[in-house]
Amino acid sequence: MNWKKLVFGGNNRYSLKTDIGLLLLRVFAGLSMAFAHGMGKVPPSDGFIRGVGKMGFPLPELFAWSAGLSEFIGAILIAIGFLSRPSAFFLSITMLVAALIKHGGDGFGSQEKPLLYAFVFILIMLAGPGRFSVDGRIRRLGD
Figure 1 (cartoon, rainbow, N blue to C red):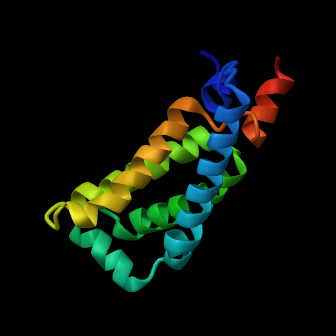
Figure 2 (tube, one colour):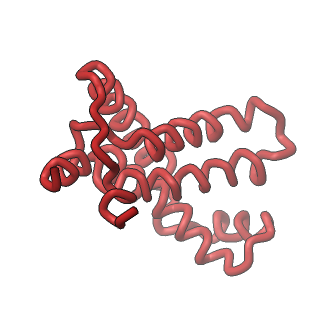
């Protein structure tokens, strides 16, 4: 498998309705994540960095920056459909950490939102962003 196929996907031929659904899901989830959750974490506050350290991560400042950039820049990339699969991978990991480590003992009510985001991003990682995306355009240039 070459890098272009890994990053931008293969020859996915979805129906028009499926591609519109992927577009709507990508834009809503990406912009919601970026502006409701990620924007406030870039740059990470001292409290956020301390919280990351309390979760047991070494180099908490690095991991706080990684989470913040993933939630802000990665989510914007998903919304526009550029580098969607790598962005969705990092966002999935970030949301699984939020659900299972940060909110691990808080019950399902606190875990639900990050789990929903995680599974949306896993879907985008597996299915790709669809034809109405920058990745789709790049993929079609190679066909």
